Every structure is written in structure tokens, then in C-alpha cells.
Length: 124
Image (tube, rainbow, N blue to C red; front, side, top):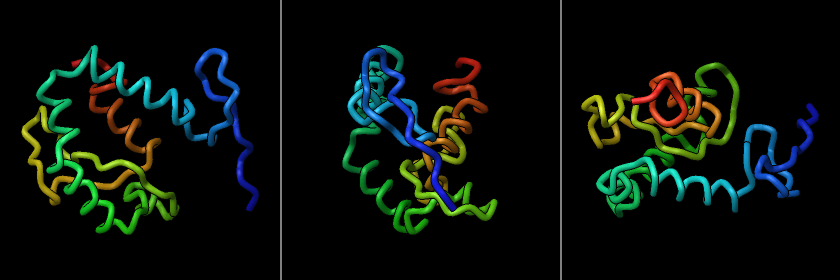
């Protein structure tokens, strides 16, 4: 099956090509994340997601899922995941342990976050 064509990064003036499921190239995606961390997240939350504990927990989650997006996998697709996600969000009392994590592709993670009203959703 042929893959979808690459599309340009959505950052104004950037000509880099990205996968159809991505909004921005690696450079501008990282810039967007830094801005989000600086302007919208509390310093405690930023520190947690940059901690050694979170990195190790995230790696364990990825290994358990064998690198595949768990949501896509449930529907029969085999997409590579790229982010650990709290099943029950931390803000709602979700635990920081492997039983409360799932490995998701960026698309599934963004959709779930929007539905929960966190980063791109209805607001906090």
C-alpha cells in the first residue's frame, strides 16, 4: 500500500516536509513544546515530565507496548507510538505508575488530550 505524501511544516516560512500525521517539523515541534511548557504549565509539572523517573517510566511503557501505539493496535492498525500517556490524567488523580500508562502515537495522544480538555481541548 503506498504511503501518503509528505506535507510542509505548518510553521510560517518553514519548507521542511513532515509526515501527514504531523503538524510541524522536529525543530518547530520542539519550539512549540518549550513555549507551551513556559507559558501554560506549572513549573512542578514541567519538572516532573523532565525527570529521570518519568523518562524511565516512559521507556518501560514503550518496551511493554513493543513500540506500537496501543490505541491503533486495538483497532487493528500497526502504527509506531511515540509518547507515554496517563490513562487517568494526573490532574484527575491518576497514578504515576506503569499500570496507568499507555503508549500512543502523536495523533491518538492529541485526540485523547483534546477529548479530556487538557492541552488542545476545552480548557481546564
